[in-house]
Length: 417
Picture 1: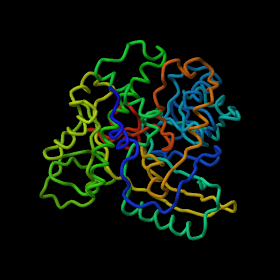
Picture 2 (picture 1 turned 60 degrees about the vertical axis):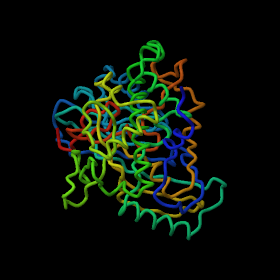
Picture 3 (picture 1 turned 135 degrees about the vertical axis):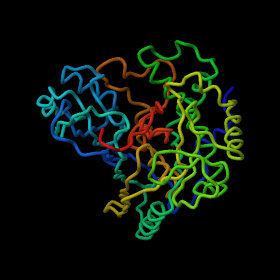
């Protein structure tokens, strides 16, 4: 049974914290309008068994990038390490690791869609989640084509100060859930044993199963976080909350007599390893599950894909700036921690965000080097490469540490491995 439209609206368009200061805007009119640079977790050693390439990717998916690199270097795709997948319709810069024997050949990769800017040796392979976050450089345009004014710039600049100091909702963006929430419905069917085993192509089944299940977890998070935003308690612990220290990684049940500052309520990413809340928060979380016809036990069917985690309900921007371009567009620059959606931040600035990149991706057939990256006949699960967040999602903090990927394994501790 499809998700009720009223529930789906709460997931895809949850409440804002503030009234927007701009009308509707357009992002990614060109790939240059959306630029993302990965923030690494640690310095490289300069020696070791792995070559880390600092690459610039343009207009291709992360899967296509891996195919291209493995083809040029004559290695397996499994030998290519990423901290997180990046947007397709964007200019993105990130580290990619390959075996050290490939270092010299790697320096020669220079394609229109992928350029290796430099290569540095390091002792370990790059693993999923091993980056602190992403720096964004976004050009936004008004939907009606009119130029932004100096007053618009002033209001946006002030709003970005607020987003740095007081934070904004840490929602998952609508691209997480597929067109019209299709990915959530697929995940629900999978959890309930109602999805045919051959629903997805065999060579993509594991990845798409993971994304569908993660979409359901994310939907429950958005429902709960939206309720807390509306109540004004998303940044203030209440009895029964699980909290994470601001800038920290480990969730724990909030001691009501605690005077520790900077403890943030952490919403649920359901799974067997998730730190449980106490009442009344536990009851509220169960009610959100019930809106999707779940009780929580379903996630134990896929412990490797839905281990469970916690994610703070607020996130905080850093290094924010805004400037008015000569063509009347606005240039916004800011940094976000791994797994935070840039479109969620933009919702606190503009009344609507039209993503031209999503439209172009929807009608463009990938030009992958193998069939694994071509559109399947079955409905496609929404790409988890944060189409407006920079990299593959960090689901939240689990009992160990933070990850920046959809498997919900322990998140990167940001220490040198």
